[in-house]
Image 1 (tube, rainbow over the protein chains, first blue to last red):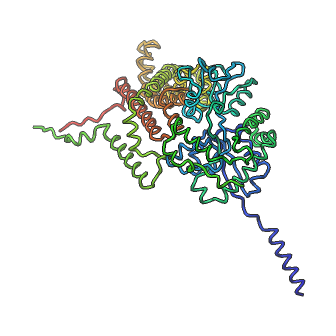
Image 2: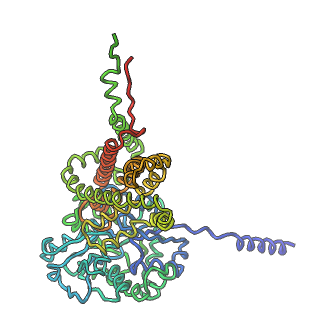
Image 3: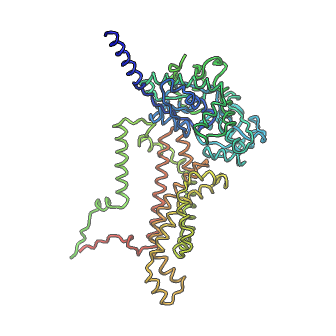
Length: 329
Length: 269
């Protein structure tokens, strides 16, 4: 009698547990810095491979309209996380915006001045007499004066035309400009898609501009209130980046699976492969992604204050801009 | 003996046309400032009106210098809208054939977002003033045509018949009857068009320019400089107001006889 009752109770409990719904996954919105291109592959790959679901996160990826706009969205909590140019985020943070970088992915800058390979513009000195297309006050244009200083160029050595992102691309494709300022893995691939011709980027990093670039940001109040969620998100994203590094083509394909108009498989793969070397500096060569060194961040802040127009009070506490505490070991 | 007993100086001053919107504007600014203080809105979301005024005061020369290319592009675009819009409206109003072919396409083209095709203008016409003028023209064109068609179509046919009966040829009849009757509607369209032309010029600048108020806006958004951004918006709004007022004055000169231009005249008994 007792045994059969126990067996019945066990059966009932087992049924109840099996039928009970799993705890609902946390809905999280990640807003990118721009329309999708190769650099964003890890996020789509991680979502496709269930790495976010494994941390009980239901991730929604939204394309952005510039690091400044995405930073403001995160500040206003309309997006939970943002993937932006960290120096741009610093500008907002120093004015009091409650944002913090929870992981810095690109520890070397992808900024470059790029033009068609057949124009043979390989060195900064070749820029003299050419036309450069810029977007006023975007992340690259703000560092451009520093690049000029480091390479001994002056504004009067070349002509500048200004326009938005699409206009810059059109200008180089149609020959109205010889070069544009862009990321090594973004505009170069778009131009290749449109014309079939290769583009050569003069990388800012090769000329002594050592600063970090893209990373994950969150509203600091949100991060404090949801520390566990932020840790899970960073753990999932770290695994996503590591997995994508090992399978660049699969990572690029995961973008197209979600967004068939997001580009072409070959150039998305090439763009992502160009991004991977930027993840680490010599100091972090053996470390997992996102583990930026304090020195790298301090150098970035100092550069931004001296040449990027960042308020000098940023130098007082560079650590206020980022935290490695949410990263997995 | 009749005495002049009208309203006193103060009442007349308060009733002057420009005082009331100015007072209302001051009210809005005060409400804006109070809202920021009450809700503790941070400066990186909405700038305090004081900061915007400071920028307007300090950067006045630079802002004025940048306002000139925008104004120039607006005026050129607006004049082109008027120049092409009114004759086109005459054709549409005068011929059912033209109307059936052209008018639906015109409405169709209006829904094409100009901000999406603006980069193409830069590709076709380069980085000078032309893409901005075209952008301003395209935005201001439609209201002029629609209002002018309405104006030309609503001419009283009896008046036309009367003038024809007095042996007026088509051109004389047009100048004496059709055009004056259409003028009120045309001016109404022109007033809407001039404010849209400002928007068009700024869209053109966003897309491809390194001068103008649109450029100032773009630059201040990128550097999170909200007071300058709002100052630029104020300048653009003022530009629209001034141009609207100019068109209104011209209307007063051209059609002083129209019922909308009547002013209240008070005769003391």
